[in-house]
Length: 225
Image (tube, rainbow, N blue to C red; front, side):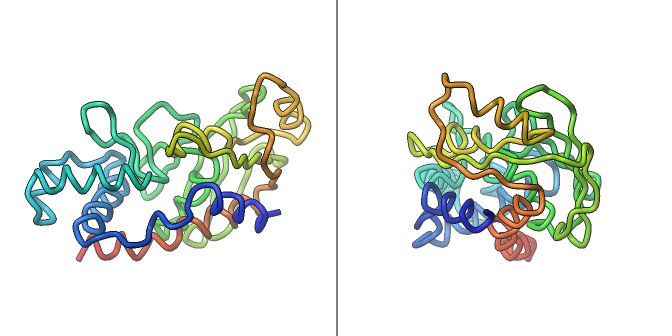
């Protein structure tokens, strides 16, 4: 199931978005990820310009190109409000790593943050069906599940990508559920138009999150150089 979910996510969203990035895009993207990891929030454009070299106008242009690739999310004023896996918009998923709490775009992103940062993580979320609080801990640098309450947590990994923005489409379909029964109850709601997807247990979902975001560890290391 993990491989099916990963193929679906890559086919729906990732594709070639990381290919062909120029140096300014790479440097700005790295610094944005580093800012989220260090403080839980995105750096402002002026801060990025002062830290990585390009002028403010060049940073602004690079951010727009990154938004066009759907690697960052900007608000109407051009401010950064997200960079996968992190978001500053309201989210049901919150992840604490090394004392810093960040909000995650979706359930899969939340599970991948520990591996991305090379740290154990504590995830707080809710069942998408009943609203029950869910707690998940990882260990071994975010590689392994350590604890889950309740024990039967499952994930629905939807695959509908729309409007060139995963944050408002694909990410809304990656949710935690306290039981498989609650996931099926949620899926039975015919008002939703996102039936394509894969059910995952926690171990499978962690495997998907690691595969998607662990590669970004090199970007964070380079941003610290």
